Image (cartoon, rainbow, N blue to C red; front, side, top):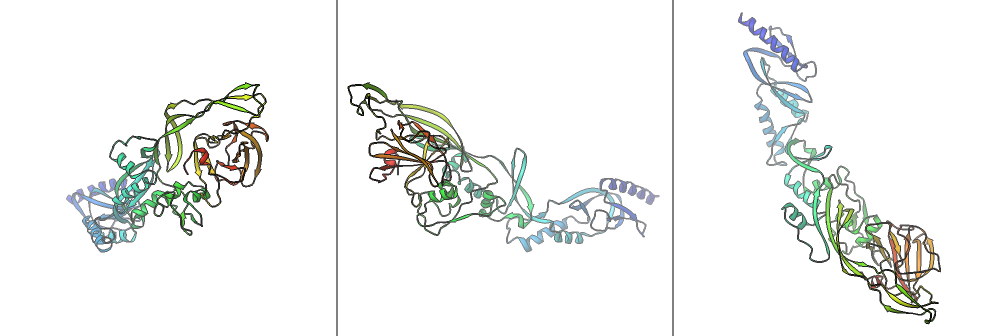
Length: 504
C-alpha cells in the first residue's frame, strides 16, 4: 500500500515537473522505476535510480537553455572550478576565481527522485563547451536608450587609470582633480581661459561578472585604446618631412595642432615642439565609445572699433590733402565667453558677460572738397571678427602669411584692414578668390580664399573696416579662413603681426 502511495505521489510530481520543464519526460524502466528521458532539448540521458519517501531539494543545471541533468553533489562544480583555476588561470589572473558563464544557470527544485550520478559527465561537458569564465569586473556603458556597450577588464584599477588618461586628452590633470574632489576651480585673475566643467555624457556602471579570457582587456593601454576607438583600432599615419610643425601637420591632415598632440601624447608635449623628419604620427582622430564634454571660461580683452570718421569738408584745403584734428582710438571691453567642447572639438559658445573699459573715439578730420579717399592710416585692424590665427608665418614650409579664422562665424565677413583702393581682384588655383588693397602709403594688404568674388570693384576706394567679401576656402584650403599678408612697395613682406598687434 505504501509503495502505491509513493508511486502516485511520484506521478503527480512528474506531471508538475513536465509542466515546469517541458524538455523533461519520464519513461518506464526495466526495474519498474521511471527514468529521465532527455531526448528533447537536453544533453544527457539520466536514469532515475530510486524514489524518496518525501521530496528533496535537487539542483538542475542548464546550458543555453538545454538541460544537462540533475547534480548529485553541486559542490563538485565549485571544486572543479577551484582546481581548474589553480592549474590553468591563477598565474595570469591572480586574486580572482572561475565561475560559470552567463549561459549557465542552476535551478533548485523539490523532487522525489534519486537520479543517476553523472556529475563527472556534466563537469566534462562544461569544460569542453567553454561554459566557464574568469570572475572579473565588467563596465557597462549606457545612455538614455539603455546599455549600448560592455567591456571586461582584468584589473578594475587599470580601467580607472585608463578612464582618467582618456579624460586628460581633453582637460588638464588639475581640472580633473578639482572636479573629482568637488573642489572649486580657481577663478581667473587675468585674461585667459580655465576649464570650469568636465563630464562624461554617458553612464558607466561597474559590475562583477564572468568572462572568457579572449573577452577580457588585459591592461591599461588596451582599455585606453578601446575607449578611444572602440572595435575599430586601425590608425592612419603621417610621416613628417623637413620643415613640418605640429600645427602644419594638422593643417595638412584636417586637424588642429592640439588634436595632433592629443593623438600622439606619448611623443608630443606641446604644439610648438620641433619635429624630426621621419617621425610617424597618428592622424586618425578619436572615435570614442564615450563622449567627454568640457566647458571652458574665456576672458579676453576685445577692441571696440570706432564708428565712421567725422569728416569736416573745407573748400580752403587743397584736393587730396587732409588734416586730422582728432585721432581715432579703439575702445576696449572685457568679455567673458563660455565655450563647450565635445571630445576636444569646439561645439558652441555663449556670451556670459562684458564690461566696457574704454570707449572708442571717432576720428575727426578736415578734408578738402577735392580730396581723393583711399590713403591708409597705417593702423591696421583684424580683417574679420572673433579672430584667431590658425597657421602663422612658417607653420609649414613656404607659408609667408597668417591664416585667420573667425572662431564663431566660420563664413563671416572680411573687412578692409585699413583704408585704401581695391587694386586687384581675381581667382587662382592656390588662393581661390583674392583681393589686393593698395593703401597708397607704401603698403598693400592681401586677402585670399574668399568664398565669393570681392564685393568691391577694382579702382574703388574702401574705408578701414568696410566689408569687402566673405571668408571661404576656395583654392587650396583645408577649412574656411583668410590668407592675409602685408607687402611693401619694395616687395618685402613684414610679419603681419607687426601691424595687427598679435604675438609671433
